[in-house]
Length: 151
Image (cartoon, rainbow, N blue to C red; front, top):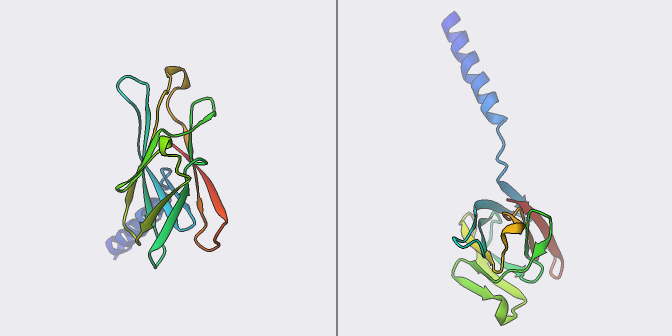
């Protein structure tokens, strides 16, 4: 009998201990989960590369509308920098094209790779520390959500 009680105690206790773990690399805003995949500098150190995964948890597919000029990468000093190019799934947006928004059709529970590259990155800036994402709220058209994701 004692063995059964101890076994049950062990199972319940370990379940409670594991339930206390948190995932610091995951951010959820407007039913979109943002996972940090990788943060790196190019081999020459002149380009910062940030790789994320975006996952929609809405029951229905949604249009994701990202403001490209407001979405920026922060350096170690807290200064934000514009992208050179960003890619979400197969959609590529170059700064030279002067495109204000990136439109992407997101489906429920399907991770979408999202990459931002910032050119002319100097070593004095260090590694990127934050990404500021600005996108349209799914519930209210014309309202934009700003979320700073720690890298």
